[in-house]
Length: 293
Image (cartoon, rainbow, N blue to C red; front, side):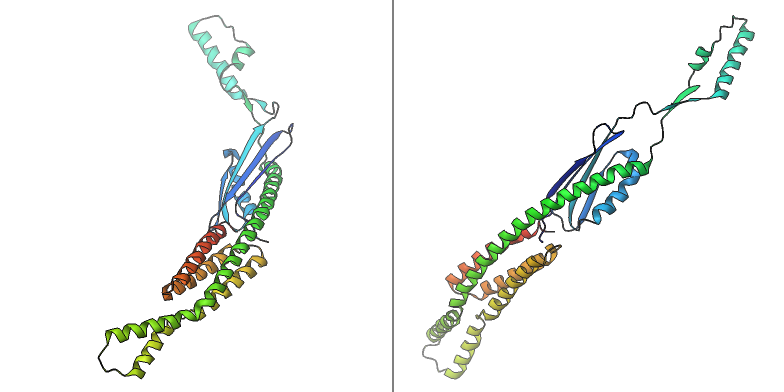
């Protein structure tokens, strides 16, 4: 099925957990897959795993990933006593007492207040535990994005198919006049040459041959055939399904090439107008194709 590159996904874990994570992902069109991850610095080691997971699900698009975290842990830190440092403080105080001959009022509470004697050490977070919480949220966000891509892609497909039908209708009209254009061009050349060469003896056979060669160059039968082939190729590609954006873009270029060739050969105003309408539809399809994965 056809998928758009424009999508959004969001997921978060339940309130009341030790860690509350929320993941938001959005994507827009891009020629290649470009993933930008914004995650708290303490979890930067998970960035590569996040990229791998996204790469396994998406093939094109500029994807922005936002991971936010709230910590609901309740005093998970533990006290750590530095006995050697406390002893050093005690000895220093005793030395002051003896040297300055002052009253010694040293207490445990006083020593404990000195810097680094007692410190709070936070429990080290397990990166594996964090990944086990974030991974399901990324998968859920990707599933939401996938759903949106499919819905939007089907809309793009329907619109493109309608425009392909419009182009084919115009091609039918071009084909109706395609045989008349070279003949009219040939007649116009003959009359013009006779005006220019009036009173001059010329080889009628040679002149007819040259006129026939020139007028034949205005025939667009081959271009019409190739344009129809490209229309069919695009329909088949749209039917094929996933990851077709680049192929569709190539077909659009070829369709535009054939339309330009028909325009360059045409000296008929009606045919020129028909080609202008085709090029306008091709450009609209090209804009739609830019957003297909």
